[in-house]
Length: 110
Image (cartoon, rainbow, N blue to C red; front, side, top):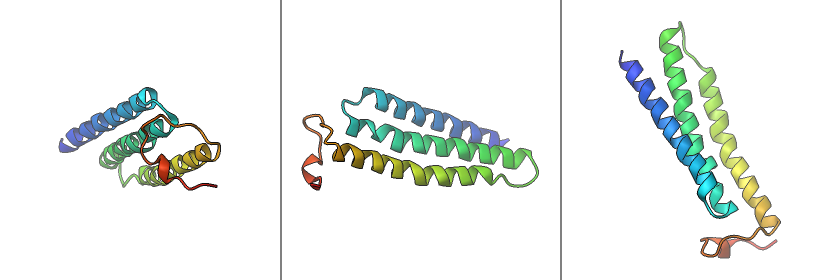
């Protein structure tokens, strides 16, 4: 009974975080700012959804559900790395940032 509440809360939290990340992807003004939505909020939202699935399937079926743990680990490792590679590629191609973006002055020159 309590697991249903926990799964429901995690699903709502995960869906909310994914929605926030998606809105950030659409609303931010330049590429460097747009990358924060998918790499941060969406990754945490997917982790909440996978934890909810792990709890649900562990309680309703015999045994533990370890597939969701492996998916979560893979997602939490690959999302920041792909974001880093996209940023490095944008810097290499000298993609213009919006005026007022912080940290542009600290970028190393190639």
